[in-house]
Length: 56
Ligand SMILES: [Zn+2]
Image 1 (cartoon, protein in one colour):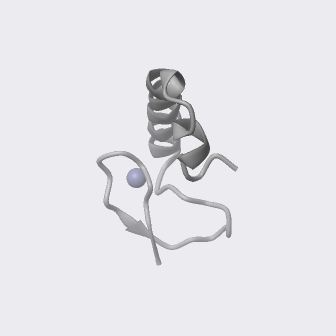
Image 2 (cartoon, rainbow, N blue to C red):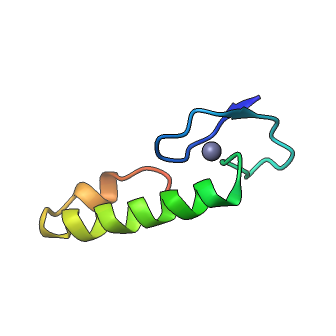
Image 3 (cartoon, rainbow, N blue to C red):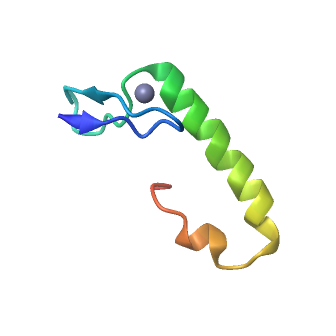
């Protein structure tokens, strides 16, 4: 079992694929948008983007 990494989502799901991180594609979409938004916000602070996890 694995917990969905989607923002505001705390659904536990069976991880059929080792790289799967979300219970649903909508969660992946939301998280991607949140990440890009955060990156835009933290673009003025050097090092913040490098410290952001899960970008690889
Ligand atoms: Zn989810």
